[in-house]
Image 1 (cartoon, helix red, strand yellow):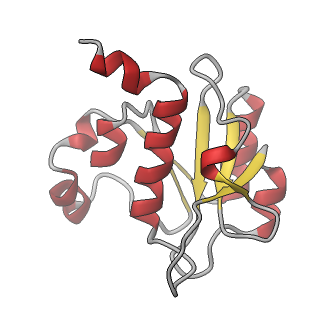
Image 2 (cartoon, helix red, strand yellow; image 1 turned 90 degrees about the vertical axis):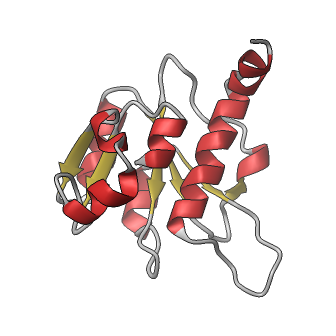
Length: 144
């Protein structure tokens, strides 16, 4: 939630057994960000993806697959008017194939070490800041 607040995310959507507010541990790690970022919960990720897409949101799964497009060169990451939702998977199993098939795109963060992935929190940060970069938000911040 702190990263969501820092990047001005309009809403966090949790799915399945993911911890949701109110939760004492979550409140502690969020350091007050729970009050600035609303949260919705869906029992199934595929239902959340379908809901978001039905509202015109561009939905991107962030997953390492053979067909995934590297995040830095992905041709589309939504726009401010339409918005973008980034689907992050389970730390162990990732994003389910059926969920990826419902998304507008599947992108990955290239890694160059022995391990083939970053943890979910790191991935969220990298992806959200790339969205802000693409939407020109870094430039507007520098101009202040």
